[in-house]
Structure formats: C-alpha cells, structure tokens
Image (cartoon, rainbow over all chains, first blue to last red):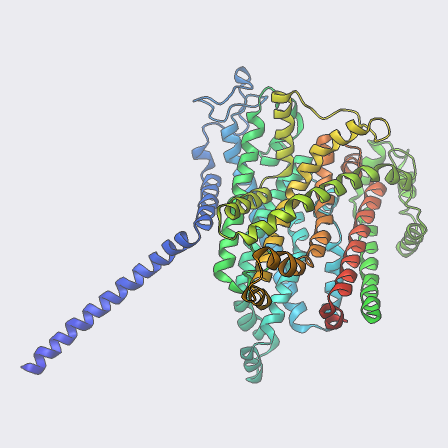
Length: 311
Length: 316
C-alpha cells in the first residue's frame, strides 16, 4: 500500500515535473524572443521594419489603394490628403501605392542579389580557404582586382554591359558583392579549418567534399547569415542609387530610387512629397535591416563583437 | 622592412594584370547590337566596320590587348568618342574638381567625425554615446542622393538657395568657389562620417580595455592624461585604415554628388560616358579610379608596416 501510494506520488510528481519542464521550455522559447527584444530593442525594431516591408511587398495589390501606374490627370501634384495619403505625382499617380509596390522591386532585387552574392561567395570562400595553394592565391588576386574599383563605378560599368532591367540589376549587384563577401567567408573557413573536430573528421577518413559540406559549412553559417543580412541593406541602397542614376530598374516600374530621378525632379519644388516618401521608405528599410543585422551579429557571433564593424 | 616592401610590391603585379584584363574585356563584352547603336544613334562612325576599327576590335584579341596595355603604360588613354579630345586631357581637366571635393569631405570628416568617435567611446553608454550611435547608423542608412535632393528642394524653398548652374573656378571667385563646394562636400562626407565614427569608437573602446590603460589608471594618472597620452596614441594607428577605406567610398559618392550638384568632375563624366556610350572614356575612368585605389592601399600597407613592427614581421 505504502509503495503503491508512493509510486502513485512519484508518478504524479514526474508528470508534474514533465509538464513543468515543457511549460518552461515553451516559456523559454518565448522568453528568448522577448529577451532578445529587451536586450536588443533596436534589433527587434529593425526586424519589425523588415517584416512590414515583406508583408507590404507580398500583399501590395490588397494594400495599395490604387494601381502603381494608374494615372489621374485631374489630380496631378496633389499634396497628401485623405484620398492620397502620400500625395500624387506629375501624372496623378498615387504616391502611397507606388511606394507600396516599390517594396516589391526592393525585395526582388535585394533578396535575389543576396542569394547570388552569398551562395557564390560561400562556395568560393570555402574552396579558396579550405584547399589553399595556387588556386587560393589566384582567387584572392582576382578579388583584389575587383575590390580596387569603387563600388558604384563597378556597378554602373557592369550595368552598362548587361543593360538596365530588374533581373540585370539583381545579377550585377550579386556579382559586385561576391568579391568582398568571399573574402569574409574565406577567413571564416580558415578559422574553422584548424579546429580539432575537422582534424578528427579527416582522421576517420572523410573526403574533402564531406568535410566541407558536413563539418565546415554548418560552422560558418553565422558569418553567412550576418553577411546576407547586411548585404540586403547594401543591395537595396545600391539598387536605389542605380535606379536614381538611370542604370537600374527602368520606369514605369515603381523603384524607390527611380521615383527620385528623371522627369519627376522638375516637380520636386512644387510637390516635395514626391521626393520625400520614396526616400523615407529607403532610409527606414535600410536602417531597420542594418539594426537587425548588428543585433544578429552580436547574438550569433560574439567573436565579432568589438571588431571594427561594431557600433 | 625591405622584404616587406618588396613582397607588398610584388603582390601589386598580378592585381594590375587582372585589372587590365578586366577593363580590356569591357569593350569586348559589349553585345553586338550596342556597337550598332554606337554608330547608328550616337554617330561615332559611318559604318559598322569603321566603328569596330575605331574601337580596335578588328585585330586578333591578343594583339588588341598588347596594343592597349602598351598605350596605357605610356600614358595614352586613347580618344573620347564624344568630344574627340584625348582622354588624358579630359581627365586632367575634370580631376581637380573630384579631388577637391574628396579632399574637403575627408578633412571635414577627420576634423569632426574622429573627435566625435573618441568622445563617444570615452562616454560609453551615456546620452552622448547613444546620440552619436544613432546618428552614425542613420548616416549609413540615408541615401546620399535623397539627402542631396532634399537639401536642394528645401534650400530653394526656405532659404532661396540653389546650387549655381555654372561651375565657379577658384581663380574667378574664390569665395563663390568654396561656397559652391561646401554643401556637396558635407553631403558626401556625411556618409563617410558614420563609418569613421563607428570605427574610431570601436578602436578606442578596444584600446581602453587594454591592461596598460588599467595600469595607467592604477598609477593614479589623471583621466585626461590616460586618454591623451596612453589611449589616443594607440587608437590613432587605425586612422590609416580609415583613410584607406575612405577613398573608394568618396569616389563612389562623388559620382552621385557630382551629378546632383552639377559639378564638372570625373564622377559625373563617368555617368555621361555611359549615357553617350563613350566606352573608351568609361574604360579609362575605371582604370584611373582603380589605380588610385590600388596605390592608396599600397601606401596604407606600407605605412602600417613602417608604424607597426608586428605587421612588418608577421606577414613578410
């Protein structure tokens, strides 16, 4: 009887402990997020901006009150009002709708360029850093040569060969960011490659491809994610600059940078809202991503804390 | 030191070689229809054959390359398709503007941003520090073409100020010349300030955590002595890196700033060269900028070696 009693008691206690543990686990997952928000309020704020932009880009047709190319010649150059929150431009297009649709261009170019830039840079950095030797020296000299060009000049030169267009901007930005990124990935590989577990993996007979894919790659994801995040901010800013200069996404596509250039500029004095809102959108989004990237770096890769990029 | 200098100089050779191949490739990579447009729309030649002849596309590729490198090495950059003048003289005419713009924004950055970065590090986590950090991130996020556009719009609206249409040379009107350059230099520098502030702050924080700073404080030295004599001296070494990083940023920024403020520098000329499909010009400007950056990096590396023995013996 006593044993049964105690048995039942332990059972209850176990169950209670288990449910407590699961509760704690659930709470800890929530509290990690909350803790992140508390520790890195600016980072959490940045993430929010990024999420808002992604939602805006995804649901643009539902959110935008007008089409991005819907002209209304009777309501040209109207200031911000209830029917046109951000005012209208020289052809009577609703600026709010154009800014919302503009998020699509930024998301497309930004994420596309980051995907190209990061994947290629990681592959290059892995091969270059892991195998070393002549191949490494050669790759690094090419990277040197590419990095000798001021970024914007390199970009407009690439664009002059590729020609303008949304896909070409994406490719151009991917290529331009590849060189610098591959160097960062290479140094991450160099740091990882000397670790004892890599030596162990090779001792038990892993091939180079397996070591690279299963042992090195998982251990360089932190710098990869950080590069991708900060690269996103760079790509969005660079796309805007290129479109502003007329080498990026051509009109009538609603690129934030493009809205600040071209024929529209002659209206800026009478209708400054045409200039204010797209620029505000670029600044906010880039600021948010930068903040989020900084926080990510502090959390994911404490070694980089106190480094030259630390704020 | 000699060994270090030699090894650093040897590293330049492959970089220059690859640079030249890449720049050489620009004209050769142009799609055929662009060459068609060049003589049909821009009127650079009467026929396609003549256009290809002007661009030097008719020889075998190796011969073309040797010719081009030989010309460039002797200072002959070719002739601009648009203005029909030698590219060398075009660059010589436009370089002072870009140089002046870049230098003044650099000096402003060093005079303003460097002390701010140091102050922000000394007063870490104070109100000043937070204000400086927010400014620095803001500066990195606000596109300079937007800032410049806003300055032009609201300068005209509120103060009746607008950038002069004609470029005022230093010789004609020194005051007007400085007035004309100060706003573009501030906008151009503003972007660089942020990174200078971030870097000086990080470096200074790192130095302040060193043991010898604690020793100096333990000795009972005054705070100002610790900062000025011990910390600042060691934090100043990375200033060289900042200088090296500043140049490519300024050259990139100059392209946009010169376009917006209508300054006749090289950056604006690069944009015009693309718009008018003046590819030999674009090629030369790229080469010119890249050489400057390579030279700057070399100087930075050598200066590092001269100042910091750890680098001299570590890498050489």
